[in-house]
Image (cartoon, rainbow, N blue to C red; front, side, top):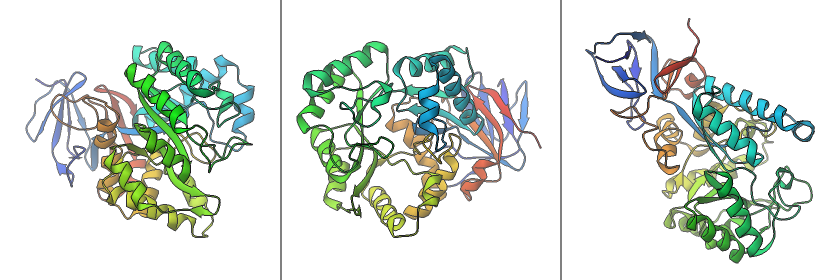
Length: 386
């Protein structure tokens, strides 16, 4: 007999085009199956609601506070206070139905401590994949996290240090960034040979490399070097955006994972044509069969950690995509591209990380914000009863 049956509502399995009326049976921390006549020691009535796989955030910064004063907070935190802040941000994400998070930038020891504390049950939070401090040039983007290095030998040493510490991914800053003064967002920070050294060393140690890259020239360098993933991939130039379909085709051909960091912050952009240009890039990435997952860069100013659902709405509007397409990007697609076995679907044997919301998000993504229950490993970790 099942340990718990979620009954009375609809379910979307992470893959299909529609949700269906069915019950979902759990056996401990795993999904046993779906059906209309399932017995259990306990049941959870979700009438009027839909259960979907727990959401996956592909690019987060748990150490930032999402405010304009983020840098003063970051610089003023002691390590203990920052770790508490990161744990609190993770908890809010979990309560929003985000059950897995890839953190792509935080002081290395703190990111690993939090990941391991969650995994051991010491604190409640989403499952974490972490990169620690991004590898960057001297004075490069996010240098203040402690990831500065230069040259091929320096970058190899930086990779080795992170793998020794226990990171899941290697993140490298292929261009400058808007949040770090005196860096160039539009120009490459590393040469092709330097990035190749990073990738070679990471692959030798069985880690994948994802590259922060805004400017189109930095994207070209990252693609030529052969990175496994590109963060942002925004095709920016000093004058706005430069659309480059042949480069997008290369990204698709090389099977590079694209994490485009689309967030609620886009709604605040001035209506000067940039939003339309960004939407064209996003649509082309999807239409060209690039390996796209859902991400928001949460933690940066104006992007709350729990606002993944809002970012999905923005992405759908900008790229002309359906709610189900975006739900796949944030569940089964992300799980597949991030190598997360048994996550992202509602299927027999899958891990029971689940989100129950009022309404039906396969028809209206805004319903993702109407959280009723969140389950992690088959256990209710957040409840918001009527």
